[in-house]
Image (cartoon, rainbow over all chains, first blue to last red):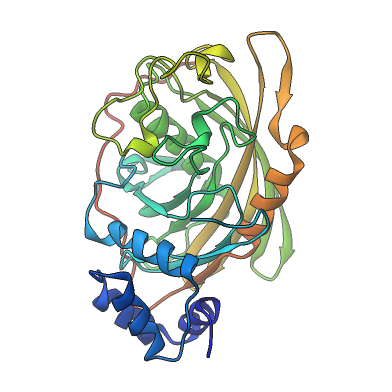
Length: 68
Length: 268
């Protein structure tokens, strides 16, 4: 099983995988996010899941932005 | 989220922006990109006898809060990360042509003015002195100083910013560290900024990481990178890990927000 770090390396070469992820977010639960990666051959550790799940806010809205 | 003191966090920009960015974030930094549209501030950048209109994004990263739910250690004088930042600019080509490296210091100058304005500085400053040297094929390193102001003061916005960026005007508890214990509001500071410049296809990418040199209220001169070498090392390693990937969809930045219309630049 590959890691999240492998996923990041892979998407630099295969941006379609990144597009898929951008289409898939936001996940409503961390387990859902975990499953998305697992079905594509990536096993995320708990920190990766937490960070990625929290970062969905970046996509969801501007409340967490530093607009200036 | 428990982490060891050396573990790095893989971080990916998820905003649908293009090009996208990934890196391995050092401990002590908040694991989230803050993408900022700088295009409104780069509408008239003087260079080569002309004024350039530049489109670009800053993928800003800030030090983590010392306490859960608190504000970034960037604003906390008790932290080794006080006044530190890192990240990168993604600069779009102009009419299909790469933006020249020589514009970089002017772009940074306007970013300082915009940031200072947002943090309530009545007369923001960002006078950049930069030295660039080639380190590879289409890759350059630079070091620079920026004469600027602290971004802490009584005008720091208390609304409209996430808690992470909302700096209380007074200590929130007796004995709590607060910028006013250490420095004067919007006082003079020198940023010591380093990074790399390179081209990814038509895009100019400019990484940056900073420490600060300043004199505190006790009259001591402090250089944060000298005093806290582990912070410097973490910044260097994070910036060295940056990966940029262009999905071939053309430049796409965040939504523009402000403008520099209300900035009155202090002349020195």
